[in-house]
Length: 226
Image 1 (cartoon, rainbow, N blue to C red):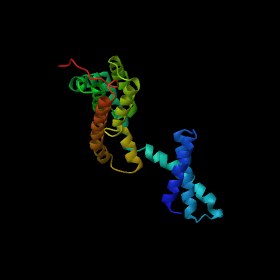
Image 2: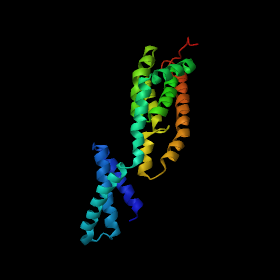
Image 3: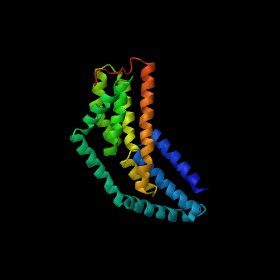
Image 4: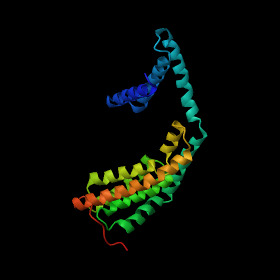
């Protein structure tokens, strides 16, 4: 059996375990370990006498690879990104971003939601963390949207979608981890995420405007800003 086929089978097994309720970390770890054994045993042509040899090799690899990955110097970027996001939050950059976007864009249909998307994109450029971005703007933007009559599910969905932009727009902690796993240059991967991240923000904005035009009560425009 080809290694790619073994990889597909173990990935499928991991997805099944996740769907059955197993924690993602445990499902990924178990699937990876089984895949290692399978690959080694496949190299021995499934010789029953050499199964234990394949198991021993797999156990050594499973013990060495995680340590080598987490000891990568480039991982030191992640706490720096988190610190920058922390400082930006306590410097009220998030509120300023949201207020600026609101004054520029809130007059369009669904404008407050569009403002939220662009503000999350701006904060993503300093935080690098999707969950942190969504959590911060959940506290800032959702109350503002609900105050003027936005649909609650729509407001929550906008913030959740906007938070995902931090996965693409550099500095992205997820892209740093991904670069280490796939052994690619971190700087190149971060730069490669910039255009898709900005493009996604504009796509979200146009979708929000379209939804607000079709369903008038979902996201009314806001007036009165100069």
